Image (cartoon, rainbow, N blue to C red; front, side, top):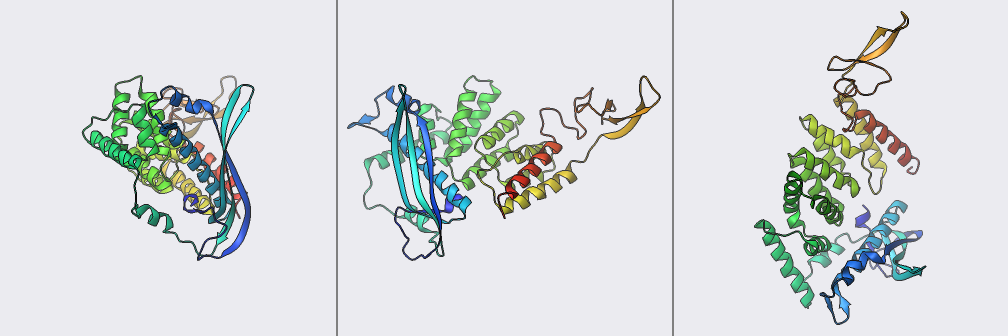
Length: 360
């Protein structure tokens, strides 16, 4: 997976042998200065000429650049990036300025990779710890406790903290708050929904899949389910195992959610994805047969019979009509706001064709 690609600034890795150089790779992340406009609206977090919020935003862009570089290396078939260099530049012109982070490295294939390296570093205790880390941990604990007591206010500062620090412990509380805002038709729902998209997007693939898809699987409110599906779509979250769980449900509404999720895009595809998409095409054909029946009727101006289709509601419709004139459902029994099985199959077949043109 892209996230498992090891990255180092060194030109080699001790204990490994480079068996293939796949070439230099680079990526650029460009952000307008308006990204930081809210920072300068208040100088409350500036100390000693430094803004902690500003530093966190830069760190977020840095991580995004590294993630994109990993994806490029993954597509090239590498399992390691050596010689990493990251530069931050300001691009100005016509009175406007933008920040650009450039990440450059060499994609290589090594024979042995210490897969536990990152987890080992994460578990290692520090000999010294900064006051900033201590305060951040204290704030994290306070936020988690407030969420448990249903007393957490999701203001701009809280959203920024739980997103930058990847506080998974408040995910259920966030879902509860979205549900409450949606049921009350609150004007602040859309803003919090957008913040939730950014929040879930920062987690590694396995974690974000578990958080979002489990929320979809357990949710009872159909309006919120659609909003959670929007989150999955916006962050390119496609997990075939979770989608299969949805598809195996006995409830048709849950199966329809699975259909919707199958139309979303992944950040990257591999050969196994082709097999999974083909599998779902067969599943869809078996689970969602055509419910309408074919029939004929005499034309208005001639005795010649024309083909029509009869909806499950009993209404006769001409073949050029996709939705029933009475119940407004298609031949599968789906409404216009639902994703039709035919549409999903067409989408999957197109993706299989596109991915297959790149993968051997």
